[in-house]
Image (cartoon, rainbow, N blue to C red):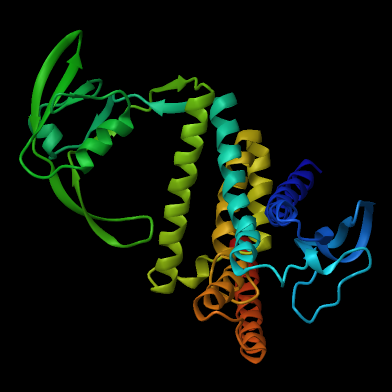
Length: 357
């Protein structure tokens, strides 16, 4: 029951924040909003506040904000006037309204990461060597298990991530390690080997290695308000960059299409993280929110990115695109979106059957 509740809350939060972005910017420009809906299909519950109807609908796989005059041919509903029509606004206003949905997904990720860092802090590995692999630069240089690296090339090292970053940024020559061993400070020179390995996308890359493994000793870092906010922004940006790289790798066929997941995979992941605790659920929600925001920014008609493309072209040529071309593009976009969803659901089902077999 807790897992089901977690799935509904996560999906509801993602949909709500996305649509809230459209809603708030539209309201800010005094564009009429007829309906704010969580979900599609038949209305389950709702209320009227001012001119806008707020509702919960039966199909929880999305939501929508119904704006007044979404097209120039659309009739103005009772209670609204033509001055509130979305279609009659300049392209830049329409672009901001459309872009606000994905932007709010990124804002949600920042907020969630902020809460994680502010209330739970952060765990960091200490730069203590747990194992020295044989026949490696570290072994030849005399590093031992239990050594604590305090500086690399006279630059202080506080956490294992600092040490790993300095090794990975190796540009040739040798690394001067200042090591604490049995209350003594030692200077150890290491020349990293360049090894071939795979990155997270399965690509072959060349990386410098010295052959040490962390001791798994961690320290808890409490973070203040500003530190947590900064860390939330940095983490969100890192996830955005990684996700964009993943999308590019999928297009380049470096990452196989079989890795694409859909609603079933999301439900499984949320259910698994719910068993681990609130922090894991929040981190997963932030990750999905970034993915949702980027997905909606793809220049595919029907998605927010497709509308942004239409309005950008309108700005360039000085008039709206021919309705026939728009209709054709929308049909292509719907077909692509259906194909993508079908692929994602197929992958989800295949993974379930393959896992259980």
